[in-house]
Length: 325
Image (tube, rainbow, N blue to C red; front, side, top):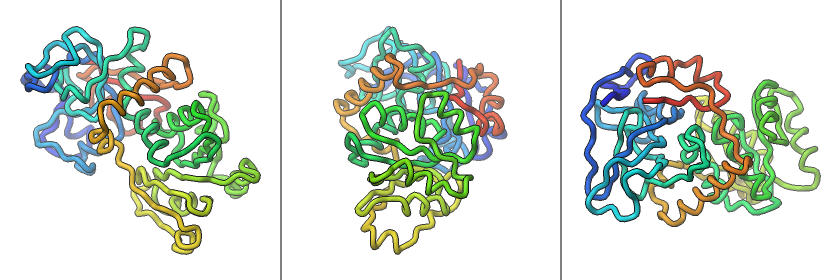
């Protein structure tokens, strides 16, 4: 089968290439899926660089999320069958014509959910829903997050709104503000403005921020911490700046703030099938009714893998880049 393979860790455009690989056979508790579309996520690119929490055995096939059709099942599989269209995330080697995954990591998707939505439905949107529950956010409460024009950030804003939770969405440019507004997302703040924290306080009025999600690191971490209420929680989700979190102990001590790390892939793998199905059902409902929008930037043939992972395309994208095997 065709696959996007790498034999060493490094810059994705340098180490990835189209290759011929053995078509995998499912183990007793696995299914094999014929890929329709697969997503390219930031954590996929970090994995290829060798900078993620998980390092595959080399040579490896890239990718961790896809939609496809089951074409083979292991002897012990009981809930899935050949011919079902399914979505999978937090799996491995989806940038190929076929991939295998454990039965409990595979979820059927309805016919009225388009392939382009199903191919990116679980990883980032599910992370957003898991973040909402990880932070124990309730209807009427406020959460602030940076890098809000990223895939998780946009999903977080839309899914929180659907649950009656208010978000303040911090980005770094006016173009990013327009991107969020085009999706119907409100309460967007440009941190390039000198008075951006005052803008946040004006939006809040007498309300308080219960939780914050930091995807940037560096001084941005402390900016969010400074806006938290007493007893609030700051979740570290990413380090886009490449810098360690800078946190003022004064805020941590006198706000009695809680700092927690969130690794969506690990939580997803450890979550019960029933609980994950509950969240995925919520995602499917919102994707179909339009509350959750998942734009696509471009779709590439697997043979064009180096174009698909190009840094300029990935850094400037306003939607997900997909691969078609």
